[in-house]
Image 1: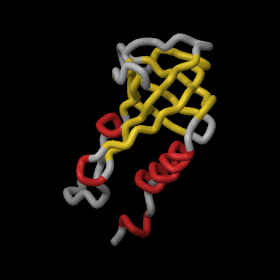
Image 2: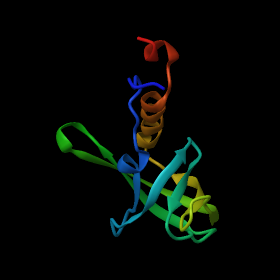
Image 3: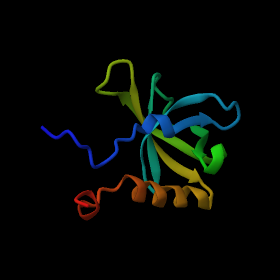
Length: 119
């Protein structure tokens, strides 16, 4: 069994919490993301065919937090494989340029490069 971990594990929920833009209350965690939308993992099902004003808080240097605000419509919501959790799919209606930059950054951060892992 391997004892020396070469790739650090990252707990996504620690970094990628999703908030209601107007109340700043957390509503769930980012399950996945694309240029067209996202999947939210939450403790309550989301209302379908409703527009949501959402915010991602991205940690920056020296503890600074950058908010990425966007509007998305919930297309579906169903129970997750984990008890007491729900997955909900959203399509983007309005998103700033930072949203696209976030996707690029996440792909780079969480991508596995076998050449770097063997170093």
